Length: 505
Image (cartoon, rainbow, N blue to C red):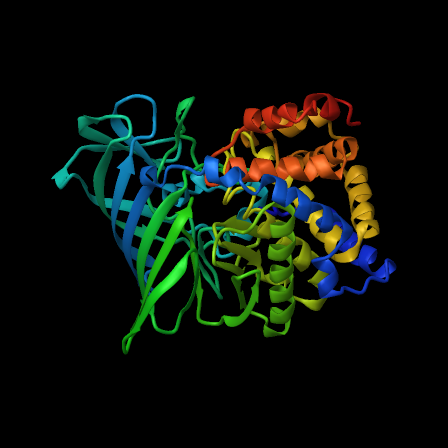
């Protein structure tokens, strides 16, 4: 996610990007993007690591399966849903309980709302408006079972199993529930232009070496952690709406009043959709990937599509091929800036202006980089937010380096060093809940974190740097990585990243 900086910092970033491009007298040649010196090296690296994926793929039979049927009630801003989840126990022991996140309940009370106090008016311009999920029925293997709603914000669902579920065994869980969207301009809610339906359905909590991860929806960073799964989603909406979504459209059925979208999404760690009656849709294609941009200012549609295409192309060459057939970038009523979901990125609609062209490009590039660092290679974004955000922020600089030249990226990198000079390198690695506000969080996790990644590159050189990142991507594709995974890989390749980072001023 690109979080909302204070206005001064936000202006500096935007000004720096635009100024760097103008002063560099840069003319972008599309063919140059694919043939830069760095990428010539990377094509060789790619051939060295191309077989890594074959031995490191996850077991597809162990993926959780989600089948959801949802009908949108536009008048009341509610979703009436049934869901069947085939849950597989991937832990090391038998279990008698299963836990699901029910994130909409974090919006059920003002004191729960996942926004800083200073931003409540931005999140709720018309005043607080509740959102929630109401579980109406719950069955395990067709038998109604007991459940408990717990968590700091009533956003954890504990399901008691009648029989213990052995390791690698699966169980069928059926839900019936109602989701009410708040009138809020965050990830989850609606404004004047869009309805943002994200983190909306019961999604299984992660079992890892620490046990069950039952963290609530907090206000700092991206408080999410999930496993790669398969989804089949049927969504019925009023016919006036156009839908942007994770996945691939299998079928679209129109009636006199509604449109039914039948969507499948394989090997993704979440499912999100955004809808509007006002979208102008532009399309493109790059490296076999269909690019769809959903725009509220049609004059910026071409720019949004161009940046999305270039970002998919650049990051595919740098890190490894984007593994899905489609990618969507969506202008949204979303004050925070940008937010990533599998195969889809939400972008603050206010960035779609000529005066914000530079910032729009930066945010789209950043959110697109998250398709590699979060979507495909996952991590616990609460405990170790730096692992995806620092990589993503530095990847954004690489986008500008590849597209506009190294001088532009170097100016941006130096500006980041200046902005974060008062922050300590050791503070990069804290949990998101340990930061006092979003500026402290962003300067440590994003900016100082990107500097740390850049310093690794400076010390080890391009060949080792990019070959190791490609190996990290291939080895952890569709999995959840952690700091140990990351550090151990560098050490295996002869790089002491702890020493490099400890020397950062």
